[in-house]
Amino acid sequence: GAGVSQSPSNKVTEKGKDVELRCDPISGHTALYWYRQSLGQGLEFLIYFQGNSAPDKSGLPSDRFSAERTGGSVSTLTIQRTQQEDSAVYLCASSPELLSTMNTEAFFGQGTRLTVV
Amino acid sequence: SQQGEEDPQALSIQEGENATMNCSYKTSINNLQWYRQNSGRGLVHLILIRSNEREKHSGRLRVTLDTSKKSSSLLITASRAADTASYFCATADLYNNNDMRFGAGTRLTVKP
Image 1 (cartoon, each protein chain N blue to C red):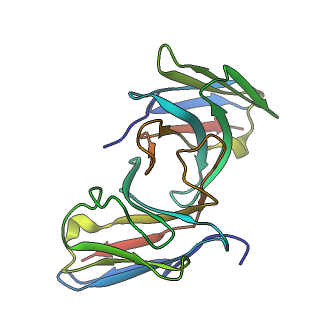
Image 2 (image 1 turned 120 degrees about the horizontal axis):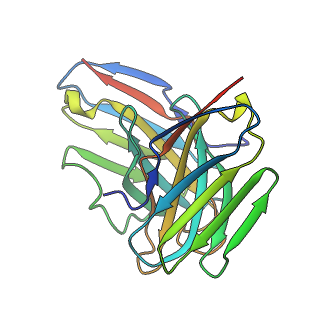
C-alpha cells in the first residue's frame, strides 16, 4: 500500500485477555516504531525495529508487552493479560532509515484504539 | 520518558492570526521535527530542521531552532480553521540512535 497500515482500527477487549496489534509499514522501510498515546497526552515511545531486530526493549511498559517483526516488514505488538491502564491509541510509524539520522521523517499509521473493559 | 516539551498546551486564535508554538528539549540532537495530529490519530510530518540550521520555511510554516537554548518554535502565519489540530515537536537524540521522542503537544484551535 501507499502508507502505513494498522489493524484493527479499534479493539475492545476484556481485562485479562491477550491482544495483538498489527502494523504494515511502507514497503522498503527498514525502521519501524511503536508508540502509545493516552487520551490528550503525548506519544510514549515503546520500541523500534531496525530490520527484524529490536536492539532496545526498555521502552516497553511491562513484561506483558512484546513485539516482533518478520521479514523486515509486518510487525505485531502483543499485550498479554490486558489491564485497564493499557487503554490507549497505539501508533506505528516507519521510516526509510533510523529517525536519528539527519534527514529522515516518520510516516505514521492511523493507529489502533484499544479499550480494555 | 518524553523529550520535547511544548508550550502553550493549548492555543485559541481567530482565523487570519498567526500562531506560535514553542518546544524545549533536553539532550543533544541530530534534528528536530514538527508533526501535526488530527482527531487523535496518525501524525503527519510538517517540517524537519537539522541541528546545524537555524531557520526553515515551508509555505505558511516557519520553524526556528536554537541549539544553545535547546528550543524551537513553530509559527503558522495567516491561520485557517483547517489548521485546528495538535502539534508536536520530536527530537532525534544525537547519541541514542534508537528513537524519536515526542512532547505532549500544543492543541491549536483556529476559530472561523
